[in-house]
Image 1 (cartoon, one colour):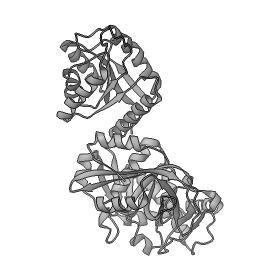
Image 2: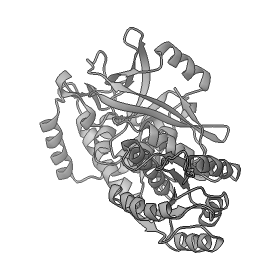
Image 3: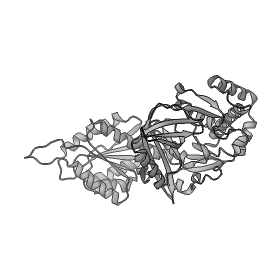
Image 4: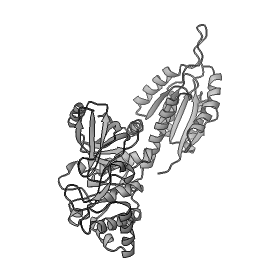
Length: 448
């Protein structure tokens, strides 16, 4: 993903409003944006946008410099022609940045009326289906910087998704209908394209590896993890699969992947749970069980915060402390493990036939999410919480998460909304950024 975001910045007002405040904001707010958001390129339009001529020149400047998003700062009340003209000409989202009123005097006029103007302009942008956000407040308010940061992060993610290649190693496991996907809907919604590599290519690559590379990998594995519970040959299969995927994924230019991890891989004693966790820590994302929608969610979470996601099931609730238990077969990235409860690399916890991490996961703020396609329209399911110190009480990877929604109500919402069984869990509070991504993609959000 290209990290640099091109942010158009302009200050606007209608001609019958005083320009002094707008001129000051043009200098001060533009500089504040540039200082506050490294990793962005601020495209400042150098004068107030007031007349139709100003608007034409401003649109031309933003188009010429390929603005990804425009921050329209209110110097004073602005007619609908300006934000709608920017949206029409530039084809990118608009942030309506409405500062608070600066002067109040019962015998003096209103100098900006920005909040009212933002409401009017936002309503007009909604009617023409132009993506936009409204941010209200002053630069010295930490909330304002957070809101703008979430919006910029979301726009950077959407920009990065366009042209991403999602690699398929096989399709989906037997009878897992929820892991099916519609390639055309995904391309239309997210801009992601797909390519496929047969599992036989993976197995052939595993077989053809130089023995010395496999031996070096085995030595690394034995030095790092307790592998005493693994059956004969499973650790070598792990080493070979890890090395094979590290070759194949960059060879084919895959930005994120999914893999049909059973039954074929299990039949060869190569179920890949622990391999997938290790790769995730190295920035190589592979969604298990062929679940493309979970993989897209994980890819977006990683683009937002850079942290490794954990594709997981929700398997239990605790009514006493209002917690839910997230668990999966052993695919959590090692950086997410809680070593205080012990970590082993062992066999697959249910069917055997591979390698898996058995451990509890670390505490901290978390965001659970999933994008799911219903009849050609994606929805974002979203749940925030706090991962608690957890003691593993079954094989595999697990963590208990305290949530705000009463857990019995949560179970009902999951059932009523058709939420699938896989979530992508990331150790960061990125719910606002996820909502902003969904808004840019015109995806409804379902709060669990």
